[in-house]
Image (cartoon, rainbow, N blue to C red; front, side, top):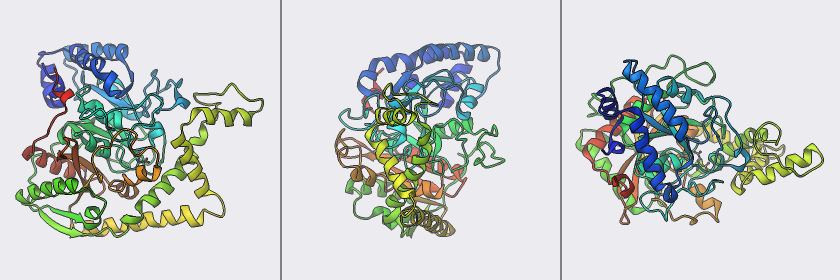
Length: 486
Ligand code: GLN
């Protein structure tokens, strides 16, 4: 049976109906992963033993009728989300030996429901990147063409769903790291509103921008998984209070919805094939009775600069905890604390992480603070206000998810600015703390997937998920060859 093609709802039915056991389902995904991981490399750690134990426990719950939405259903987790007793490496040598002593809130919530954790997904080191080529554990490859990147930094989470190695996964998104790899790998990815999903146990990159979210084969599955991880255990004080599960959101009509198209997102620099595919999605919405409104986000040209200053400044502070004493790697070289510290960081961090720490430290240093960091925070306010103005006349905003489709492995690696510019369509959403979902909308002439994004008002996940679902229902998705293999 092609269980990897099934939705969460279908898997729930099969499990509850005793057509398949949780152990068989888990074995199905583990076997698929073992077969193709040599080519894809979407997992850093495959948790075979733990997953089978969790599946056995889940089956007991199913047999006893104690069933939650995720009981017995396998998922994969990005390797910057803590999983008790299992290595949480962040794709870095620095945390190669770090076994998380506790579960992140999202993982605890999944486990409480009886979900099965298949493994920990590959990622750019410390979630810094857009290609998943900076991982200490090797490059992850795109299931549509293994000579190309899966996007990043949650490239492993997207590739593993796209190749049918897990029904869905969790990624994290600081500047696009759920949506961009989802679009490169032909799957659906949701970055929730800042404050919807607990960040407790997510290894911090840029705390004011980070959010955990689902990557799945459809908007419906994203909603299913989002509900499963929306849980407040009091450990994240930035979490919004009183959040209710989404519930039945897919029966609402979307005709009359106003979709804003910000002209800056369709300007020069966006590949013609991407523009064309995104505009044909816009046409589909028109046919479904939506109204298209031309809008503008004038600060977009400054967004990359603002994002890289804010994100790197926060990263330089967050990554100060890796000193060779508290966590992970410690250099054996050096006689004083300072020498060990310097050697530890030198050996433990890769080039991109070092670059961000340097950039962030520079932007925060006295004398440059006003010129860089402060200016970036002013831009952040401006971008927020520009989004607010758009949402006065629109229900959602539609943009390309990335300026181009998946590039060749190594193509942008020598020039960081090229890699950074690839984030132009996603970073403003994090800067403004808004929810956004990337949906596949066709393939380029070489078969690589293209995605568009729907950005919603804060906490309007129900609206963008429903609108994404309506599009998915009238469009066809080209699956990867890996997904189509038995
Ligand atoms: N590509 C962006 C960066 O490198 C986004 C990363 C992310 O969202 N984690 O910072």
